[in-house]
Image 1 (cartoon, helix red, strand yellow):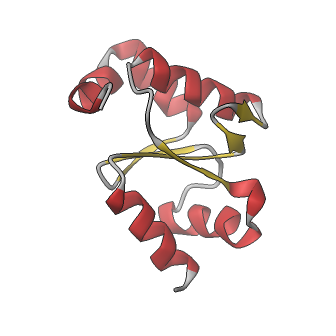
Image 2: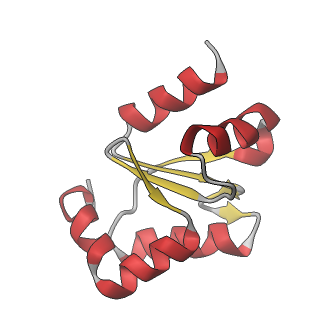
Length: 106
């Protein structure tokens, strides 16, 4: 399976996916840590995470997949939402909570 197919399967088979540096228990950058905190603040305690530092092909592949140059990247129900700054803006506006409502504590 090629990298793009692997990414596509991950984002479509999991309601919430965060491509990040490190993992939710030990984020390896401040942006990834903030993204995890935002998801938890929205009540999402279970979500799929992919450590881009563990696989260089995934690290580049996710940027190509979304046409977005940075990590972390959030996907909800197979749709690319954005990175840390977009997550923050959506959270502050109450939009992210609405999108995640049905998935919280799932």
